[in-house]
Image (cartoon, rainbow, N blue to C red; front, top):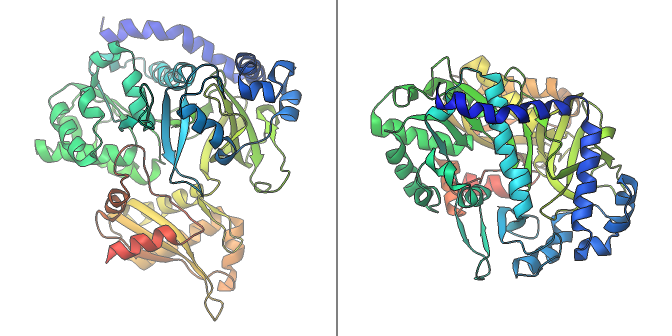
Length: 502
């Protein structure tokens, strides 16, 4: 029997447990809320918000406000300075550095020991459990796992307190036994200079028996390209003949899928999407034929949702999981064992099923274009680009889009800056197909495009090769979990990129 054949028996009890997600969603979530409130009732935040007196969801809503990062920032800052029992029991050592807010360059998300074990690592375990369930012939554990990570550094120069990319925190705290099956070596994985790291990872792994890879699609593609350069091979399975799965997350896979399928031509290759963020691990693609993900309901995460058509209002509707409806765009609100209470995550989702609860990520509460009432979200953009690529044979590496505001004649449009891995033969035709498909996907966009009265035809500007990486490098954000915002109501980012585009 293979090593995988032995190891997969360890996952069988959890595979059976996960079946509760099909019909017991509300029960699982109510149990999570009770557990979180009970554990945190003696913290400062728990005492101030009557956790000990809460008898269920209605009391929780009455006693605890919905919070943005700004509302919790003061408490998090005290925790970073070493204070105990503030938002979560004990002292929290680790802080995941995430993309910033309106007021700050970066957010620092607490990552407690409970959060590490009962959210982040549990998500990784369930990812493997579901993959093995769907692929009984897998030989996953008979080789090595290539896992991309970021880096970390001291927090406020305090002893025993650190900040870093979530991926670096996970690698630093992982069970030592896992290091026996993962590559590259820890020292390489935690390097901060991505260009040096990329080369070292390629050199350390190209002669190993890699069976699975995990990471952000854009950064993984960069590493794999270096592997191909060093080996001189045409396809990745010539380097790693037993490679069978890419566990990917962080950014939408749609713009990268074709490039991966050209790089890896093996019919035995699988792709599995994960929804893991600095704030938690929330979803897994449990069915390879379905692009939606299963919401993970029994971790230390309690979910609530705000309909996006009410988001930003003074008193929006907030519903628990058992109050959601299919095909409604929601902003996600979470409460976790990392001390985030009714925290607006910043991601938007839409449920494709409520029995079980399955969803797709539609974008960000702030990453959309609504300059003229068109309400264009990232999901629209990804699907529109995929359609235009399919029709023209083009491939998109990176992109961002922003509005061009009205001029003196009332003319306005969306401007797209796109870096192509393979350019379309006719850029104007690509733009036409993208624009028309966006109208099919989004009725608000279609209405604003009607006869070019409000919104004129979109404009595409071709980005030079490497532009987006150069911009990230200039911002000190090359590698790790950093990514370029896809859509923005502001022209700040696109204007910076256009200036560098020459």
